Image (cartoon, rainbow, N blue to C red; front, side):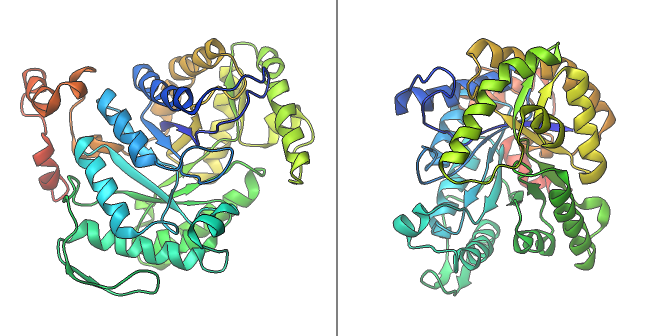
Amino acid sequence: MKFLLLTLITHQPDPVTGAVESPAQRLRRVVDSARLAEEFGYDGFAVGERHEDPFISSAPPVVLSHIAAVTSRIALFTGVTTLSLLDPVRAFEDYSTLDNLSGGRLELIIGKGNGAAQAQLFHVTAEDQWDRNREGYELFRLLWGSDSVTWSGRFRPALTDAKALPRPLQPRLRIWHGSATSRDSVDLAARYGDPLFSANVTYPLEPYAELVEHYRDRWAAYGHDPADALVGAGTAGFYVTRDSQDALRAYRPIFEARQATARKHGVPIVFDTLEDFAERSSALIGSPQQVSEKVHRYHERFGHEVIHLSADSDGLTDNQHRESLELFQSEVAPPLRQRIPSRALGALRYGTPVAPSDAATQGDAALWGDVDAQHEGAARPTDIAEAVHR
């Protein structure tokens, strides 16, 4: 199994202390979290995209490019890229640039997005957002795979023999389709042979399990090998300590603050108590053994290979969050990696070596030249194109 840390870059008072960071402080903390994720051995780091309060994650390719410059191994994800809001040509330019700068570590999770601000800022409505997402995805995919694209659609000007630049490092980008409830997204993923990432954060297991089952059914119906289907899943909360009661005690004010916010905005309450939330939601709150058992329980229904955990402290102290991440990686992750087979992420899909941690700041020669002394015959960025055809 592989493990990502995810942030939507919320920018609001700490739910416990009420402290507020500046936007600059908050964004720098995201970069620090990504460096910590790589230090602890997590497989990927994901940045969401939202365009309304309380989020400041409107430019994930910019944030991920900064992260690419200060890391060298960890896979870089979006979570999700809202293609329904973006010009696919411009999105290609941004993410192809990021793909080159990161040494082929990029993977996208796409989705139609949500929120009232979409209509105000982008004139995208609930009535057309799905069609925009599908059309944007299909054009983005064409642009990634060809340097001469002729295309026409509903939501942007047509293209004739268009060449979008820079050309990407990865000949075929892995694009996951994020879905909370949408069967349209699931069907699109299955049709094109793409992986599915289930949001898995609001309700108990069952509706998400049904969605994953539908994905596997559609995958087979489109003629793909069932063994090639790939699924990831989110988590609704995260805090692991050696003593489960300590975990519940520390997480209780966070849960109560979330409940108060939900009631304030008229959001239905799904889990009435913290104990119910810890037991029936996808949240990983408790001892290493409890957390491991829950991951296994969900895996029995989803068959997933990747999960994401929160990159943010969300009301925990920095030390609590750091210790939780470290404990998970040292005691929970190793047996899960061993028992649940999973495919490589990012540049490691192509056999790309793990570079020294400081190489990313020293240019391409440092990243790929010095590594040769440690990994004779290892892959370079130019080898990625050949690797996908082997």
